[in-house]
Length: 307
Length: 293
Image (cartoon, rainbow over all chains, first blue to last red; front, side):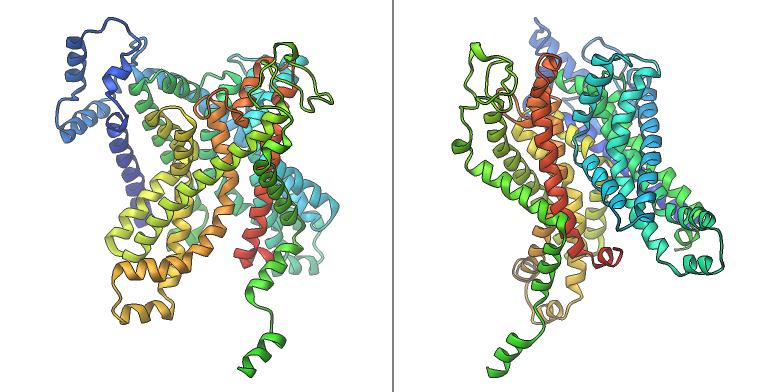
């Protein structure tokens, strides 16, 4: 277990380290002179001022020195300031992060709930019209673009019926984005749950339980559902990182104030410090989520930690 | 000679024929194939199918509901939506082809080199693939567009880079399997050089599998590219790209809901087609899946 733990943490740290290199280099990969691009909008910047900015950002130093300076600042929690508004990047991102996490978490609960119920019933009724119907709806869920489903829901329930607000910060404005992201991902969970449950239903211990004369509900719940959920739960961790990615798009449909919306604005404004900060924070988030999920899985399943 | 023709006529059907039979018995896969073929047909014959020029504006026919003359209605500039959707199918197929092509080219190179070289090269290369994989397609694609700037070309490159790990991983594991086959050992023993082994022996053996695997990634690529265009980071106006059309339609939803519904349904049906096709292909590739039914 200790070996697995250290290996897994080392991998996570390596991933974050690679990301810092990529993010630090980002400004050099950009075609053209980044300083001129960034300050193109603000009128009347003299060449001397541009030179001063370049020196301040360390762009005249050798690349490794720049990386060292970058890392030094990052480790002190200084992610720089946004080009527009001169706000500290880290504060801005941290202020928006809870909204994104809230959206992704609620969506995950919806996706898991809907997906597991659909998948379980499809497996139980496998080969029937119920199974086909459930699996077709799951496939449609997977095939629909998130943003399109979101817009349709937005116009039907918020604009036409006016049951829910179009945008806002309270729980009522969370309903539609969470359903959008949840339903779009429920399809994947439903398909996985179905195949996992069918595997279990075909196994000997289920037949034994049936032969013993156990109550049908007991067999389905205790033996099939719980056993069949192990791969599904593993999948949920990966699914959560997908939710975080999907949230970037969905936040823009519903004007939900998360880091995804901030990131898109930053890309349009070419606000490189903000883009760099966003990628780093998002990377740390994804790495942490998958680390925690892997460790949880290792605790739950002895086969993983012993290998 | 006589023996061979005898076994050809009366022997078991080839593996390929069996797999094709299996594919065509899967109703979903056939439906998927039909959807994809219809899409290809529409894209090729777009100028013959579309009744209007997709860019032709008309002040007198703005935001018209679906009718005989305009089966899908018109948009805010009076352009015929049916014609735009028909021409948009070309863009969708081009985006899918190029994005998947880029992903396949990078993934194939990485997987081939990583799997063949082994040792440190393998560890470093595959670890980097894992890093890209762990960040989900959306983040990688956004980061790439942030660097390259918003445009359709850059969106295709971004989606290609973002979906590359999928191909790299499969290619890598295919190479590992090939390395354990007798022909590989024989080639090495015969003293073939690295370039010869890689390009004349390994590549031809894994390429068919990889091309089939590519069909699994098409729907992801289409959805990701449409998402970028929807956000304004991909195709730019007046392009009839479906994701961008959908985004343009949202300002007119209450007056002209068809502007948003038509491109959305087009994307959904296309992705559904590729998903069904991919499921059929996956079933053939992964025998475990078939025993589950």
